[in-house]
Structure formats: structure tokens, C-alpha cells
Image (cartoon, rainbow, N blue to C red; front, side, top):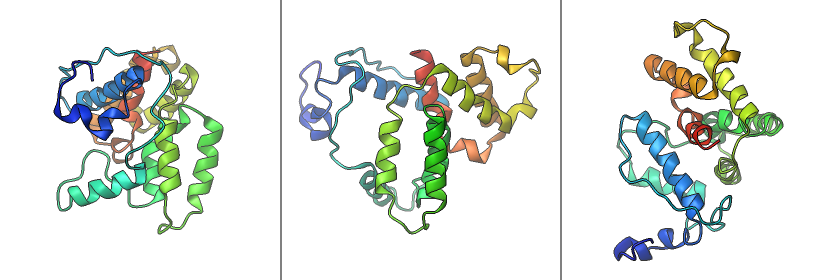
Amino acid sequence: MVNGKKGYAKHPETLRWIGHGWALRMRHQLLAAEMSLRNFTDRTPVALSANEGTWPEAYIDEPRQQFIILADKHKDKEQGRIPLPENAQQLWRQHKYSVMARDVNLYRQIGQQVATMPATQDFSALATMLAELLRVPPAVGGMRNALQHMWGYVSHMSAARQDIETWSLTKLFKEMQRGVLASKEPYLMASTALSELQVWIENG
């Protein structure tokens, strides 16, 4: 896009990001945060900033369809950190703390709705809603609330016993993340919030 290179520069998935430099930079930072969680180093930072706060409206493949494509592509292969969801309940467990960081009332509402959904029910609408909700910058208070809930799973592992209310958001996130990785806490190991909140903290 920037240098007019051939090949994937004309791919529909690339073209839909034209004019959305800020969103592309944020998407790259989210990827880099996940890479960091897995001990990889990002060596290709993106410095675009056009149209701050706006994201591409159209998908080449809707989020639920992307899961289906990936499931076929990676059939019989080891799952990633966040397994491809098989039902709405699993998808919600993976996203719940990211949603809590953005809107507590919506967190409760979605949780109640998902609890009543049959495991076999199509979750396309939920997948799209969550994908787009995670584009919304969370407020500081919302992130602290979500991180404190996550910290409760691993707080017993920390040597730091002082009141976490005195911790910076960055310290709370790093201590929580460190505890989850050290213990392989199964619930949080598959949480989107384990990496994606880092980007919003750093850009806050």
C-alpha cells in the first residue's frame, strides 16, 4: 500500500484497508501484542494514521466464515492459543473480559443471552458483534475493572502483596499476564484480553 508493491498489494483483503491507515496500524499492533505474548519480536512496525477512529466497514469473509475457513485450513493441526470456537459459549468465554473492559452492562447482557443459546445454534451474529466491539477503545476504568477480575485467577502466585489499587494499569496488566503464562491458567490462556488490552493501554 505504501510503496506500491505488486502481489498482495492488489489483493481484496489489502485493498479494503486503503484509507484506513490508523485502523491498519492498530490491527498490526494487536498482532504484535499477540506475537510478544508468544515471545516473537515485531520488526515491521506500521506508522500510518489516516482516518483515526474509523475501520473498514466491509469484510471479504464475515468473522464466522473466517472461523470455518481456518478450521478447514488447519484441520488435523494443533490449535493456536485461542482455539477456533465450536459454539457461542466458547466464543463468549474467549471474549468476555475484552467486552467487560468496554461495557459492563453489555457484558452482562451478552452473557445472559449466550447462556440460553443451544450449543448447536449458529453464532454468526455474535462473532461479528464481538469482532467489531473489540475495535472500540476501552476506557481506563473499564480496563482496570476487567484486569482486576482476571488478576483474581492468579493473584495467589504473586509475591507482590500491596493493594493493587495503587498499581498502574501497565503493572496490573503485566503482573496478570505473567501469572497467567506461568500457571497456564486454562480459562485466561484462551482470552483475547490477555494480549489485546496491552495495545489500548499503550495507546491510552
